Image 1: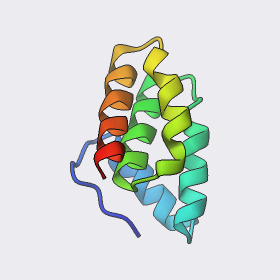
Image 2 (image 1 turned 90 degrees about the vertical axis):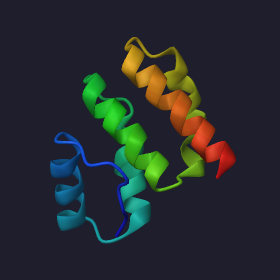
Image 3 (image 1 turned 60 degrees about the vertical axis):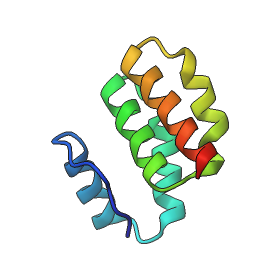
Image 4 (image 1 turned 45 degrees about the horizontal axis):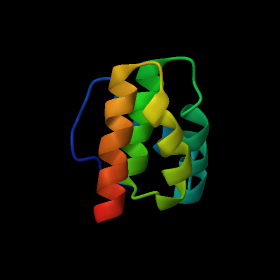
Length: 88
């Protein structure tokens, strides 16, 4: 369905779950967009990474909002994803 460049212990179960229950990429993007609002910074960061990997350019407005996130790792992931999507 989609490839992930870097394997992380936290992301692998998420990918496995999404592949098992969702058949199309659009639905996966919708789920990941919702995860950007999760209370856990780990969930938000993983969602950003997955959206970047999927080249989900429609996520750019939501990613811009995360540049002001309360957690530095989320802010860094959002900056990286925005740069990647802009270069893409």
